[in-house]
Image (tube, rainbow, N blue to C red; front, top):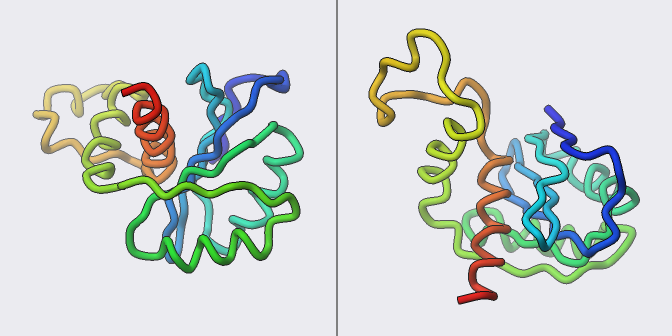
Length: 146
């Protein structure tokens, strides 16, 4: 799923958030002003092509990537295979999955019977790897200002 929030091309630098995984990955593109331009979950085999395409559309100045399980392998792959080299910063991704569940319900408020379930029991109806990528960018930006 692709969510393009803006049809114009930002002129300020943007950051690509990347939640790496074995089978599927989350990607988000956000401006320094925290404007979200794109977020999607995609099969791992489509990551390089997708990031190359996003680099053509957005002025991506940095990749912020989660530092857990598959991160080292992905970092090497990105550095070797991206058409436009870009700096990659690793960010602590502990607890982002829990935070992403909460953010999912903020972005997509529960409807119908799901509204009456306690928040801890609700399960998102779609993968949330893209929301993890958003949170990774926010963690990076928060680290710059704290």
